[in-house]
Amino acid sequence: MTTHSRRTLLKKAAITAASVLTVAGAGIAAIGTADAATATTFYVATTGSDSNAGTLAAPFATIQKAIGAVAAGGTIAVRGGTHALTSNIQITKSGTAAAPITLTAYNSEKVIIDGEALGYTPGAVGSSIPAAQRGAIHMEASYWKLSGLEITHGPYGVYCNKCNNNTFDRLVVHDNYETGFQLQGASANNLILNLDSYQNRDPRKNGESADGLGIKEGSGTGNIVRGARLWNNVDDGFDAWSFSSPITIQNSIAYGNGYNRWSIPNFSGDGNGFKLGGSSGTGPAASHAVSNSMAFSNAAHGFTDNGNTGAITVGRSTAYKNVKTGFDVDGGSTSKLTANLASGNGTAVALGKSTASGNSWNIGGTWTLLSTSTSVITGARAADGSIPSSSFLVPANGSAVGAKI
Image (cartoon, rainbow, N blue to C red):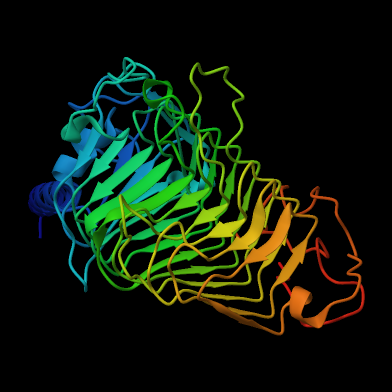
């Protein structure tokens, strides 16, 4: 073969190789584009743009844009910073049992959702918040998981109506102009896990309405509250007003509720730790179940049936230094109180038609506590989000009475 022929063959081989690389490169680019279009995770950042693709490198600017883009089984990962709302976040699409949708902080970054610029923050005295404007996050959907978000200054923090099969994990809701977290309507099988809700108030209703957590005005079985801390709210820590299905409350604390820290005129906050039902007149017969929970330093009762006519159970729980009654279950319920501890309250218990056995007042004697310091139980949460363990309000004599958190 001549030198010229060899050069011609090499040139053709180079051209062919280049063509192959070009096609391969085009294929990689096409695959990358397809992956971006079908990505299961969308990202949101304060530095993003809603004209971006929603990738980690090119995030959206608003959570609402990501909600519009995400599909069942997808994730919305929100980067740290303060996300100031100009309109509230609306979640009205649902995931599925096999493919829930997740809205979460990215890599545990500190995400603050601030609703101060929204309407009704606060509303005028006596005004009513339109349904769609309730909540910095307003949700009417099922099969979602919300995790690791801080929500503040909203007309409600999170407001969830007709919501089923959702998980709310490690949310912090505070300084809102209504209840920090409210679940209502036909809502079932929701898990509220490791919620911190504090300093929520409602000047528009003179402090009568804003609780730390409300599951109220509705029905639906399977709703569970676990590991909640509800403190310094203007009305009650927890309120189950007019919710007609059983709610389970475990390993939770409510304290310092019902005090007028905001100098609200004509103040009408109630100040219960756990308000377990009630409504105008005779409350619904809802058999709520409370275990291993604490109510302390509230302006009214620690635990109260508030007119609930059901068979409430309260076990291994503690009421400490509440102004009125530790366990107030004489409002029409047939509650059963077992192995609870009442110490330092205005009155230990008001039973009415309810029954009690194995409680500190049944056993009698003087109850000394290992610790009355709140520093650990109200401090930073454990790595898994749970309330840190301590000897707070544990009986010094070792009796299996009251809560141990």
